Image 1: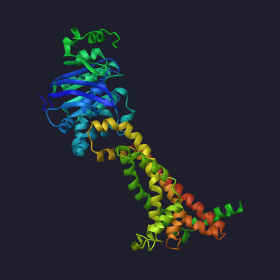
Image 2: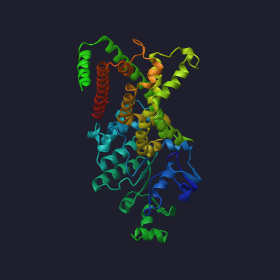
Image 3: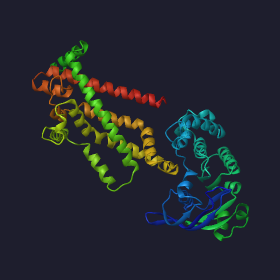
Image 4: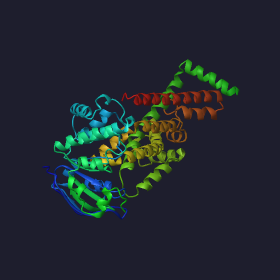
Length: 237
Length: 234
């Protein structure tokens, strides 16, 4: 059990320029497994993840971690849908978060080599990150996030626009991380991926948390008609 | 046409014979402008990064003023620096007027807005790209600035080159604060102005060609440096 959790959202709202994008959300998340956030386009999945992570403005309500917000931020990382690559080599991208946390270059490079090998980028350490393929970039972003051994990892549609092989590799890494005790919260459009990874599902619609359930049960018995319609592939408005 | 040709011949002669006076003037030009460039870069680059990263009141105004200062008339800068450094001015006690240091100060004032403005545009674009990542990594303001400066170093070299170009060709301000004193503050541009005034066009042209050659040489050196960076050597 991670000491960040449980985290409680109390009427938490994410706003931008005075407009509420997500919420108010009341929710408590515990510290184990994988939570998958699903919902149609524009439901607020990305903003929900960012609000939890602290990079989207909280326009109202509270998010209470089981520790200080600073500690919570220190122990979490975020992988974006479009991976952001530092204009540096693969090695330099990997050691960046470690160096920013004060680790020595030698130690950081040792750890980077291990992670690069783990995600299949061991032979690309000297290549410039911005010229990698989409799958390689996403694996690098994942390794760069996980190299600091966060207790909580947010992933915003990590496999969007990736081919099947790259998706499988990334899911294997995520399953390993989950087995190692890392808490994962990810959004996805891919219901197959949601079924494969979810211990818990949050269904968002128009910025509201419409439904919540344990992984297998949610997919067979969604509680709300909107969630049922979404899972059936209907257009949900 | 005859003047240009004789200027070229005289330039080749002066360079070929390593004319002592030409060397002295050219070296002083380089010394003053490179010193100003280093100081201006140390001020302008962190300022540009700070303006990109930090949100504060009147930030847009500061950026607008900085952009406007790119067109600062050098003669006015020279005049202001002159007033500040003159014996009755607030910095007169330092005794810097009519010294190369005064010329460096004037050049710094002229090229800081130029370097900061060009650098700010590049760093701002990179910041838009890196914003979410660096915020999510929880890095400090200082770490953000260092990261942006390092990762936009190629564009910053171009900004520095523009600053060098403006500095090495400057004449109005340094004439006022330097005084064009022989063996003390005479540089290529002020020497050209002097020789032209004396009607010595061939020598003025010769000095002009040397000035152009120097500017091209420094540009080529910085481009070579930039190429080694692209090849990942640093």
